[in-house]
Length: 302
Ligand SMILES: C[S@@+](CC[C@H](N)C(=O)[O-])C[C@H]1O[C@@H](n2cnc3c(N)ncnc32)[C@H](O)[C@@H]1O
Image 1 (tube, protein in one colour):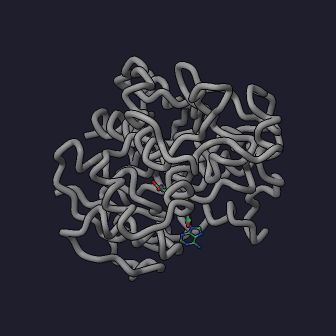
Image 2 (cartoon, rainbow, N blue to C red; image 1 turned 180 degrees about the horizontal axis):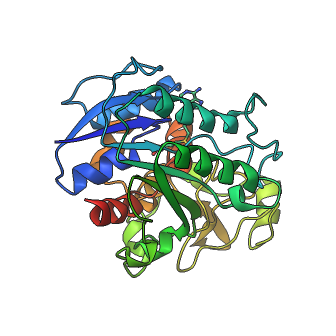
Image 3 (cartoon, rainbow, N blue to C red; image 1 turned 135 degrees about the vertical axis):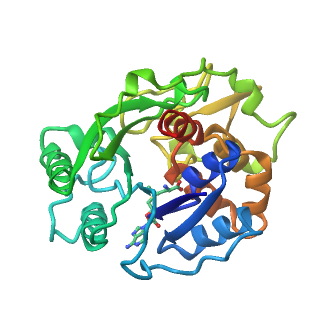
């Protein structure tokens, strides 16, 4: 039984990947501050222990794998780029909580630590914290490697590039080149069949003006083969794109489509949709990590 610890757990993409792979998992802890994310997580894993915790329960945790996708806002080019220096109080500086949790574990350490974050952690003004993070782990016996992975290389028709850092205790570097990739699937398989509710039609004048634009701001590209990175608010510019629906009209992706484009099944989505609103479901998809990337990482590791 694999023991995992999910920090900043959201809707639990690594857990979903392991479940899809049929790997028996014992979740040691799941830490998430947002009650609505916890609600979705519990709905998806309802046959298991309900999680309410927001804090790590104790230091005697003995996970095999620790996964954290700590907040990215202050690294992201979409944010103000306040960075993640320790003690800065930014949300992204919560990455240092993970380091302190691992240090406080004492002699037992997880064999593998996986960190996911935006591409900008390697930018000129942010890279020092990424390097520092890896050197802190090195002092605890880990060898870290990182790569920029794109969801499109793992079967999903979504342009989403994220940095994955894999740290292995007392081991070798993790070789990302040998990860199993999959050709990008046809986006039609991810879209709702038939017309969708008028709620999703692009109506706001500012958004109508953004249609077809592909810059970094005020962008609402038209989706052809793949969508752009799914964000917390697909109905805002810059957005992940819109679909032509005839007569010169366009619509946003639905929440269900956003979940599918992150690799979640309709069963997972339907469970979460029972307990959360549309707006929340969008946010949870935008915050999550593509499930097939975790499947590929775990396949290589386990
Ligand atoms: C990028 S998302 C992680 C998504 C997650 N890996 C998934 O698959 O859905 C970051 C998460 O950190 C959570 N978070 C932010 N501050 C936190 C804190 N102080 N303690 C615990 N979780 C926090 C947010 O609510 C959000 O769900």
